[in-house]
Length: 407
Image (tube, rainbow, N blue to C red):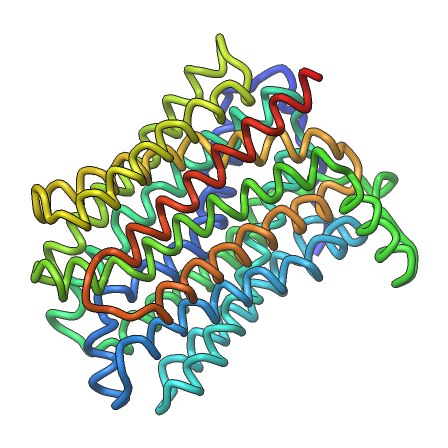
């Protein structure tokens, strides 16, 4: 398929072409979060159907995150070498195949492998859109574009658990994976026919395997980039600890219905992408570093409050929910600013830099989800403690980086 010319967005940052690009990139990025959130209300049903504990079904979430992490390591440099669209087509093709295999899986082991395949393919929707943004924009414009993409992505976690809960009223859990396969096909169509190529041929990075490894080494030796990458990993660990642990806490400990769980999950997602849009306003008068420092401070304080509520039982469900709402809302400030600060360090090799950033985030998410699934259940304290720990680590790391920059 011939490549579309690189669009000129420099003079029309709010024009129709710009908005179409944001919506398409937002959808491609959202396919992964939808694949994570859509089947969360089905965990108890899937566990009963497969004859395994819920904790084993939770591991399929970590499998998907590991696939997302590992897939980006390959897709990032491929997008620097071949352009942005070809890896999207291959990736979403693999995602769709994995979703169909999930439908026919008869064991949790087969489901685990199929989810990892889905993650590896869906990694294209994480690494490539960020690289395209860096191809087309610079400076604060990167953070603003990533923020707008988060508005589109934010619709996914708002709707996905509610849609999953609704479908479970009428269909078996397999229908949730047919729907994900449909999203994969739609992503293929959008990538093929509505997305321009953003990386000119003359700027593509060739070379053999050793050259690729050398460029990865250069990225990983950049102290500031590594710092922001680790902050992204901690942010993702916090988010996916919640994603993995919240079904047990809300459905089992607090006894809410699957439909009510979808509502609570969606409200938390509303808070996240609402602050992501506030970030667009804050960037007019504040730097990304200042916004991050404030966000981590609020996050750490809220996390410690969540531990207190879990230990004392004060306020019950609504206190626990209110503090998780604040914790997750601050993530809306973190992801776009972390991404912009890291990617602005690499105007070239943006695909590789995006891959390292995304891989670290999903490895962090996998660790957060895995830690929760392996902890002893029975109280909300494991989830509260994990989220609080991430907040404290993030605040400490951000303060250290700020002092290092000012030194």
